[in-house]
Length: 230
Image (cartoon, rainbow, N blue to C red; front, side, top):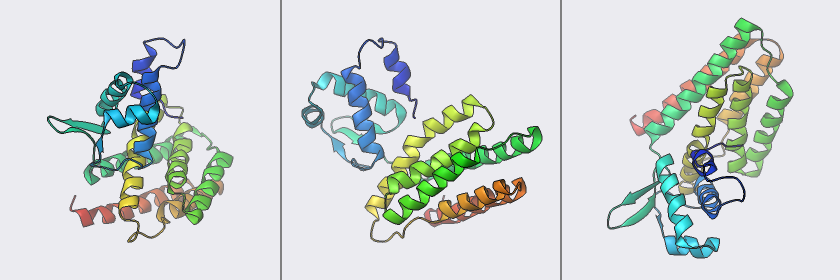
């Protein structure tokens, strides 16, 4: 689903065969996003090369790309570390998602666009199942896909690309935070409840009600961020 910086950078080398560089990039990136690699973790080029069965050259190229995307950072004399996504950056990403949803609702009302209700329902059901089963990666993925389905109604490709750019870091922040605070955090419910309200409002033709649900979730999340003084 995701079109990333590497797709553009590596595409210049030709598509005749999947490059080891791209394979390394995709594998390391997936391990970061799923919180297998946690913030602050030191990554060893040698260990990654052994794990992925390749030389250090494609590993270094992949690390360079992931640094550009903001997932890794090099510290001179110490090595390469998984970069922490600050709560301030996460809040800004969340605000972008809220703005996109509100825009999609406004455009739909002004231009008479219809939302893909079956697709929204599919992600809502997937999110509910993921929450009950404790599959948090699927939970946040379906949450973002729900937003993506709303944005798709606008036909705005630039907005969809921005959403894809945000997705990886958003997932990493939520999954790593949950993993590091597993004992103190309850199962997520607020996004699922908000999406259910949005869906119900859209199904009955009530864009104002859907907008109210988006803003209510935004207000709740904003209150949560106040704990971190941002």
